[in-house]
Amino acid sequence: MPPTLASLVHHSALKLTVRAGEDRLDVPVRWAHVSELADPVPYMEGGELLLITALKLDAEDPEAMRRYVKRLAGAGVVGLGFAVGVNYDEIPGALVEAARDEGLPLLEVPRRTPFLAISKAVSAAIAADQYRSVTAGFAAQRELTKQALTGGPEGLLAALASQVDGWAALYDASGAVVATAPEWAGRRAARLTADVERLRERPAPASSVVGGSGTSDNDDRVELHSLGTGRRPRSALAVGTAAALGTAERYAVHSAIALLTLTTERSRSLQAAEQRIGAAVLRMLLAGEPEHARTVAGDLYGGLLDAPFRLIVAETVAVSSVRIAADAPTRVPSAAALAAAADTNGDPLEALTEIVESAAARSGEAVLVVPERDRLVVLAADGGAAVTACGEYAVALEAARTRERASAGDEDELVVGVSAPVGPIAAAAAYKQAEQALSVARRRGRVYVEHEQLASGSVLPLLADDAVRAFADGLLRPLYEHDATGRGDLVASLRAWLSRHGQWDAAAADLGVHRHTLRYRMRRVEEILGRSLDDPDVRMELWLALKATTSAE
Image 1 (cartoon, rainbow, N blue to C red):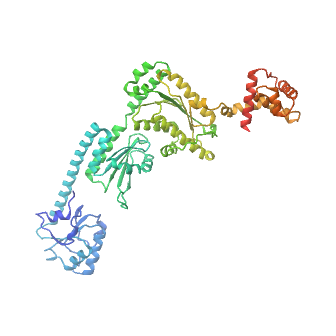
Image 2 (cartoon, rainbow, N blue to C red; image 1 turned 180 degrees about the vertical axis):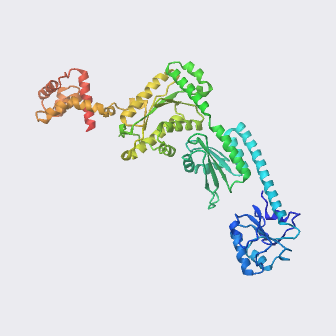
Image 3 (cartoon, helix red, strand yellow; image 1 turned 120 degrees about the horizontal axis):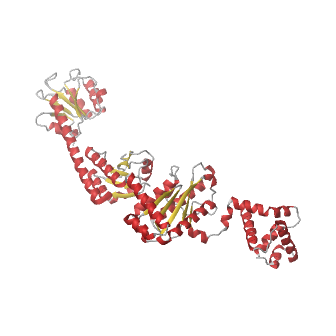
């Protein structure tokens, strides 16, 4: 620890005597400074032991000494050393009384003790303290390195918490807590998610201090540090302590930051190599070579092919081409998904990649993510954390899009198609399913569509496409123009006849006309359109056109 007034008083070579402030000798001394100025305060930084002979002071004037001592105490001077036998044979009573009233330690320095000796003692003690801190820091670095190699990030956090006499927590790229030490710190770490999110918005490396106001027993002083070397941090470290970190603790924290960066930030070349392997595995699966794909995947992705998986295909579309779907999901998105949806930074595919990879890393499952030109292909375990996170993120985006429909910007929107669960042998079929679901998502104005939803839903929402509506309007326009002249309700008659599957009596009853009247109207429809209602394809096109125009109304 740094030198204190008490350690200087107990220094056998200095022979110092305490004349005032006996109860404040445990305060640290940052430096020993000699000044005979009547007002040395402008040159003080705080923490100094001021040494004087009172050459220019009226040390016997009580009022002058009260002002002098008060200014010293206000400037953070921790003690006053008065040399006797130079200008005064003993310390004047006015100065002693002023020091006692202000609570400022006053030390009597004998004539045989030069001020230089006191300065050397303070300097030597500071140097020794710094050496101990550096030595302790190196020892902490060795211990942290050992724990990182044997216990991973969890072991490293435990060692760091012990070194700083506090707690430590590791966050992933999404701001979620990955690990804490000790375990009881989990709740405190979770309360800092918003602060971690703000830290991620700053260029790496970044740090901040939160808490430490002392307003409650649990109000720790917490330092947050970003981890990673890329444009955006991949994770963050929180260190909570009761007070500011000392030199040794600071060495330990810096060592932990370096080690955690090494363990959480893979090199660019390794990332590129893994991505190439993933792309090769995906190509082999789509080419119908699951065994070759399994061999290439090895330990990196092999486990992913041992259980049913889903293929996810995502791409971006312009906001202007996206409609808000009336049948959008009504599920309530999670808080984490909402936060991620609000922070896409203009690149939805990059945000989705981060969400999926972070979820998989937290759950310890493998996930294959392959950027493919302007889209993203993900192969993830069915029912796993990655698929769940993708769905929650899409629901959050859907909710955000609905809220902001009136203030849509120029950013691209994300659309996602998900296949049904399959095995490696059916990967090509799953890819087609995901593309079909993606196409439906684009047409319906949805963010996220699973292939199972296509069969369980209706084909009618697909008629909302503008091209389909234009076709329907062109096909039925002659009939609408005929009806507008008041010469018969051909459109309503056609709709009733088709809805009754061509049953004349039932359709005529629905319209309230004779069946011969309905037969005449259907002949007029054939004449006006130039098409035969005996053709099932014509009947199908007319029915879909009627449904499309009805949905548009």
